[in-house]
Length: 414
Image (cartoon, rainbow, N blue to C red):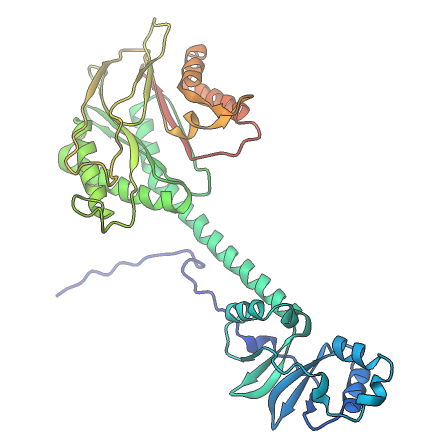
């Protein structure tokens, strides 16, 4: 069998495994004392090595305890204790149960063990062994520093991966922007993930007799939402290839079935499915000759303003989303038709705008404010209208945190 091999190019840092250090990297060479030595010897060693936090006690090369400088010195400084204990075995003030770890122990495991032993490990340190033989002393401060460095490196690698995922997601959407410029002269498109990647996506495709557009809001945001956009976008493209762009309701039904199958949320799988995810969306087809808009909507409003009208109209569609466990496999959405004509304005927005909390009463931005902005700025080019929507939304949001991804698509027919 002949196989075709393709060369793939990846970012050099993507997929690189983080090499976690082991306890041996923390091993410090320090003086030790035999269990047969007396406290006078311990006092001598601490006097010669002022930097020594604790003194390991060994028997035949194996650690059996740890003498803390602070504890030892405080005991020997008490009245008559030096005279009483100086000639006695050093195990008198020894911690007989210090933390002892093999040199190959991963740092994260060591950190968990140190936490379990309490404050004494962070204060007095721990003992590192290699096949039971003393290999070095580890300080609590050294462990903390390495844990911080390890976490920082993990965070850096995660952020590199997410940044590169953003490049992939934006590249996936770039073809639609190019198609949008072919189809429309007066248009605005805003796509702003709450995080670096997001759960909103759009698809625009130009055909000889018109153009098709989809705006969708997948469950969640950030990385989980971005994963869903890949599934949903692939399902949408496949449905368009099979059925064409003229029947948005049919496309929506096919995408619903495909998403449920991909996520294991199809009929009979309710008990097995580990997720209940899907998307809200608005699909529409605009006929180039008649300027008639055919649309299907799943929980996403479409706002339109016809020339000469003094009110922005809203079509809401069905109140059921695509792909969810409770959405039937054979769910059928319905098409609505709008005769637009030259000068008509249309705007579709995800709930990242509509549900954003803000204002003096800390309530949602709402559809009515979006309608008011459209009506008040109807004379502006759509790019300027889009900027005005964003300005008003940011002012309304104020000090509140962005709640969700934010996307909207608007156009005016010429």
